[in-house]
Figure (cartoon, one colour):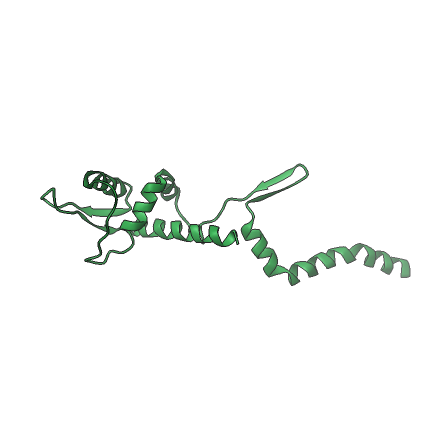
Length: 150
């Protein structure tokens, strides 16, 4: 009987130690896993996709986001900063190029643009619900990336 108990302890001790370590180090393990993009152990390799801070974006939204250049993302973040009346900004591009990019953002469903009748007047715009979700995903994703680098 003594041998059975000793055998049981010898074989069950390491799994219990692992379970105990996981319970005790749960928060540290979560932090470590949130920073990992993948790992490799021998012939096994696992790659994890970065999550965009709890954002659940549709495939269509991800494609729209991926289609934007860094300059377009910069401009998108600027023009969607607020929908407040009277908020203004300056961009270092021509009015024609600016209007062209606004049209592109509108085609993507990110903003709604109101072009004036007179060409020399400035367009106004509002951010769509989808545009707000994508803006939040960009900002949260960048924030998460910076935090994981620390």
